[in-house]
Image (cartoon, rainbow, N blue to C red; front, side, top):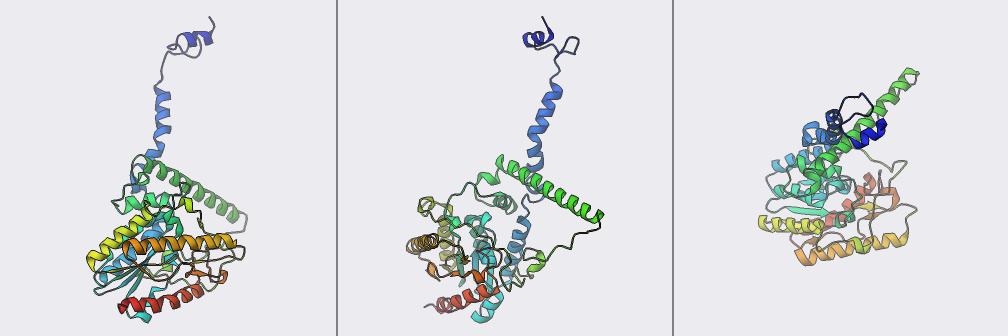
Length: 354
């Protein structure tokens, strides 16, 4: 019998004549290390820090706006939503024009509406006006969406929401994946900068952006100037296929229902409006028309079922390409001014009880 036949017939023998018999321990140990590496990187949740690079920026907004809201003793106005609200209103200007404190609790679409409004609930007080401006993505199921920010968020805020992305075992695997990706990106950046420096072409200092801590004041207000669209404006996702929408059973409308109950209990008013967004020069008219149809459907559903106030109608928050900043959901200063002029009259009516 040759050595190969010997191993196949008698697995306790080594891979060749004279090799030590059955010692699977090193192989098993190596296999366990490979298999458990993601858990070693992610099982401690945020012990290694947030897995998504966007989480710190989003939590900074939450932290500063929440602290500001808790310092206010009288009625206030809170805008809530994804990053369209972070870039879509100017709380400082609205405060002056309305004579009432205005805050923008605009986070990130990836946190998702149920977790965003969960953060708003403790801030609601008597006489408040809470304005929710969901993006259309908040009413659809999209398994392909990167959910690393939500995974971080549910752990970071000790959320009561039960979602596998924030629980074992999916959470550590997702965290490990994102952390490994971050290591790769930082390594590539360091290596590129080292080569540029060594060849006499040091990289320029990083530019200032609207996503740095200094772009916001101590109350969480965005103070970064945005005078015109950037050279490249990214087209944000705009789902319009009605078959993907889940108004009756989805977590988006469920979050609005839950907040409506909180507002009733605390003597506050819940209002809604479509997310602010812009068009682009190469938009397809049929797609934009369907987007307005989807907006009208969720606004009507929320009004009929939960008695919310509709501040602006479907299509009433859509602006031209000249009003974009870096994406179609982020407005520049001109766009913010236009939306403000539309909001002030209707908000004054709500304040006056009309």
